Image 1 (cartoon, one colour):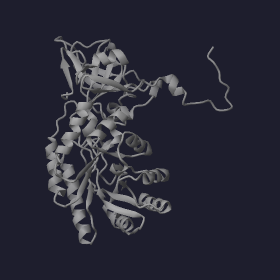
Image 2: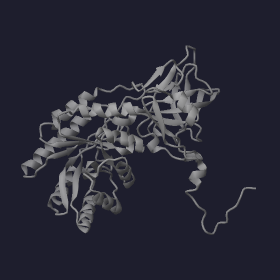
Image 3: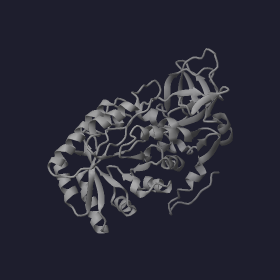
Image 4: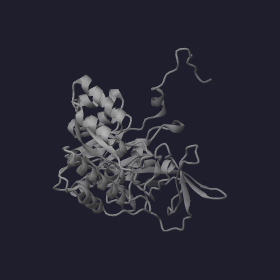
Length: 425
């Protein structure tokens, strides 16, 4: 647990608010985020690079809640966005356009137009066709588009296969063999302003050595292209630094900062970062109620009212979150249990063989490390509602997303003109 989520008088609190009290008011399941933890995480990241010329752009895809984005914006964060929707959220949360980086491998023409007219800090360009389209759109709009070329360094990130992005077999970035052509256009077109190079090798990277490999390649590129007469004064190092999930351990963040300074710190470049999970991952928990305590012939199951539609990471990646009782574990002998949801999929499994002392039907549990890629990836699968999100600050809390029920979801839909509305008998 982080310092923001602790037991007090036997009850799990978010800062100074009991999670049981929130559950009574808003119902379960729900997400809750800690303002203090969000601010502490940003400060720790910024302090690691104190005195350096850095821009920290929060990767909005990790958690798109406006209250979360605004909390980080109040700390000084910019934003890394991958869609117009994320761009609009960043702007609505108060982040200035000149602190917004537009990433993503599939930028559409209308998205490029919107970002250019908004005046974003830069586009992270992922392919030659994209670079050519940005050039065309900029010419049509009579704007100069700031572009950084995302390099694919062919470095394995040693993380989940689904979140590894730095190898040539993935869809991300421009390989070194195509760099000459990309540089010719990026630096030769009157419609483009080449800002530098970008690299991002994956998400939840918990071994920092791949960062060293990628950043060393980046530093060599800077020296090579400077020797050719190009002025390169900006590097974007992406994000991807992991957090400890259940049973995991990571090197201290200071080790990552040291790698950055050792590899690219002496190049005289301004540096951008795009952290997501590192800022929000441990600042959120998912609170759920046990519906049934089921003992089958083979196994014991604790069936929650939260499902894979609310938190898909375990089903998608095999990720394992820490799960703890909201009422501090009673000193009783409790058999191991698989913690599962109600969705009609065997993959609706939060994890196997958890020991939750005294927990049975009717009790509340908290799934920790749920601030990143959790609510943001949720869905309405099985006709289930989007669940509430709550922001805590000291002894105060507020609902920052209400529960969106099925009746409201159905208002988004309509019958085809040739279909007659019918009522159930």
